[in-house]
Image (cartoon, rainbow, N blue to C red; front, side):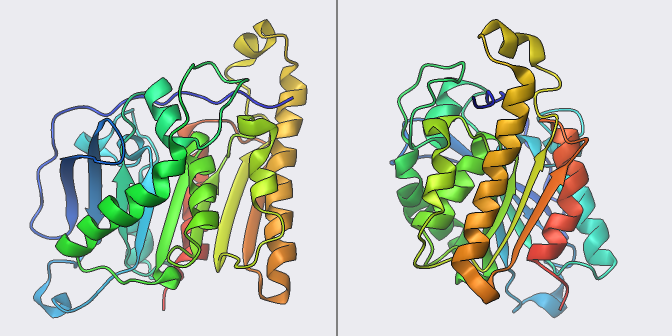
Length: 296
């Protein structure tokens, strides 16, 4: 049995102010790939606007559920991942190289989100939706990435391009790592849902010809902690779904290590106290981003 996915709180509509140095930019556009309007939250690292860095280009981390990533007026939920606060601190401590983060908002906290992020059905999940996630490579390569490259100084190439997400966002990130291996080489995967396709993410990562350069995968042992009753009402055993959730993530990490051989750089964390929550993902984020973007 697989774990249910979890919905995410939606972003507020009011845009954040744009500081002169670094800070956050909100961009909205009508996608030609997906049927819903899109919002990008582009976080620029400290010093981005400094004259001394005018010619500098930065690696970039694309993350799903952008409405939950940043603090302050950019937060769609209280606190969220606090990506901006954490990266500001880690960059200042010279533990992480300066990186641009592009948050891709979900169109809602239910079926529209599932439709955009999943290329396959999730018969165990709570929503009825048409999977459109097979359009994600086109969405990224034709709309999001060209837009970011036009307006911001980003490095290109798989060694400088990462994708990340949690739950269904983690599934989407794995899908892009497999289907856009020529241009995305880094992955930050948290609590990827094992229920779509009854463990399909494990099969995606078998027998790879091109492997990611570096991937960090985190999963908790008590993912269902806050939703045990709804899971039980579906006739599922919450304890078994927790074990299955961790097992699927462990298998994905093992597949990537086996495919990469001696050159594999796969970080896997099984967190005994890890829940399916922004608090847990925020707690694991610092070490994950240090692994992907170590200071040079």
